[in-house]
Image 1 (cartoon, rainbow, N blue to C red):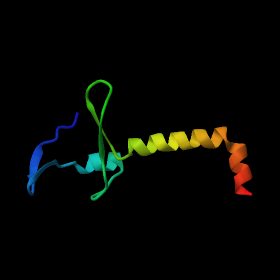
Image 2: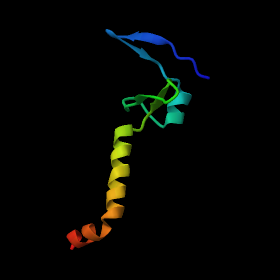
Image 3: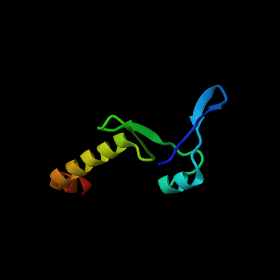
Image 4: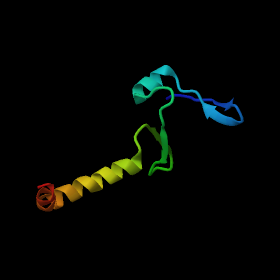
Length: 75
């Protein structure tokens, strides 16, 4: 378990991520992280945008279902 301390950053608050955590998340300074609510009432911190993932799942479904139409349009 990793313990993070809330600290003051200018007029806001923030947390400092250890280098090991940033390496595990595959992020670097300036990257965006997303904090989402988990089903169990907790939170999840991820570098992946969950809205974008849902959009890509829908796009893949449409491309699979309508592949003949898309093939015809590509000509």
